[in-house]
Image 1: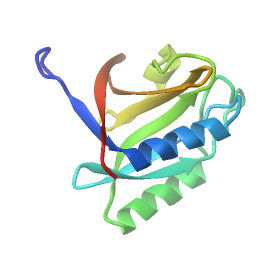
Image 2: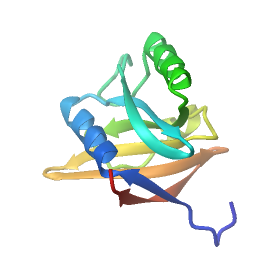
Image 3: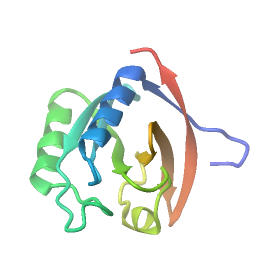
Image 4: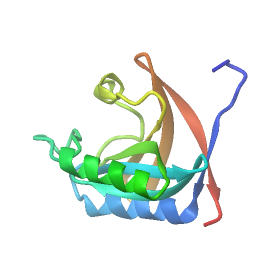
Amino acid sequence: MSSNTLEKLVLPRTLINQLLTHAQRGDENEVCGFIASRGGKPTRTYAIKNVAMQATRRFEMEPAAQIRAIKEMREQGEALFAIYHSHPTSPAAPSQIDIDEFCYPDVLSLIISLNTQGVLEIRAYRMMKNCATEVAIETGSS
C-alpha cells in the first residue's frame, strides 16, 4: 500500500454495537471473534471463546469454535473479513504479541479498548510483516 493511499473501513453501526457489547461482557478478560463479510462488506460477528491461559492480557481463540464459524461463513456465502479482540486495560493499539502472532495477512485486525472509563474505542489495523498500519473506521448505516 503506498503512503498516499488512505484505506477506510465502513462498519455498520449494528456491528459496532455488537463488538462493544461483547467487549464489555468480557469484564477483565480479552474477548475475541471474527467478522464475516459478503461482497467485501462486513455483515456479521462471530464471538469465539478466549481460551488463553492469561485471558486478561492475551487472546487465543477456541479451535473448535473457529472451525464452526468458518464452516458457517462458507455455508452462508460469507468470507472472513476481520479478527477482533479487546484490550480491557490498554489502548486500542496492537501489542507486539498481537503483531507477531497475527497469521491472516488478508484480513483486518480490530481492537476494542475499555481502557478509559465511560469511553469505548475501536480501531482497525492491517497487519503485515511485523508491522501494523491503522485503517480509518467510518460508521455506516445498518
